[in-house]
Length: 227
Ligand code: G3P
Image (cartoon, rainbow, N blue to C red; front, top):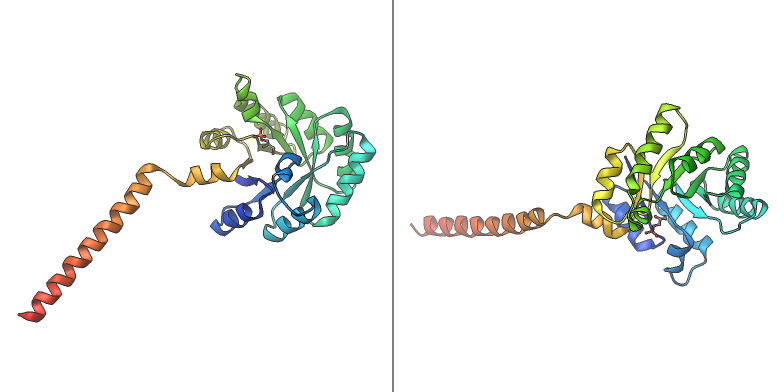
C-alpha cells in the first residue's frame, strides 16, 4: 500500500521522506493556505524536488476550459504532478480531456462508489473518497473505499483508490484491509502510526537496562584490575 502525505508543509514532507516511507503528496487550496511566503507553483515545485512520487495540485476553476488551463499549467511544473479535479459534470469532462492529453488526474471530493466509478471511466488515475468527512456526518466513510476498491479490481480499471480525509491511524489499517491502493494522511497521523506507548516505554527501559549493565561491567572490570 502506498502512503502519501496530505500537506503542503515542506518540512513535514522532508521529514517523512527521510523516514523512507513517502510515496507521494496531495495538496489542496486549504492546505496551501496554511503555508506562508511562497506561491502555489513554488510550493509544488519544491515538493516535486523532494519526492519523485505523484504530487497532486488542485484546480479551482469550475468550468472545463478553466480546469484545462490550470491543469496544463500544473502539469508543466514537474513530471510527477497529478492534476486534482473535483467530482462534477465539468470535472468529469476535464478529467477525460486531460487524460487524452496524457495528463494524470486525481478525482477529489468523492463520496460515493458511483462517483468513483464515473471518475474511473472518465480516465482519472486516482480516485479520492473522503472517509473522515463521511464519518463526520455519522455515516461509515470506509464503506465507499471498500465498494470502490472492489469495483476497480472487478472491472480491472487502471485507476487507484486513494483514501483521503484521514483523521486517525485506524483509518489507515481499515483502508489497507479494504484494498485501498493508497492513503493520504496528515503528518500527525504518520507520527501516530509510528508511536505506541509500549514501544516508547520499551525504548526507555532498554536504554536504562543497558546503562545499568554497562555500569555493572565497568565495576567488575575495576574490581578485577584491583585484585
Ligand atoms: O486531500 C484532501 C482531504 O484529505 C481533506 O481532508 O481533513 O479536510 O477532510 P479533510
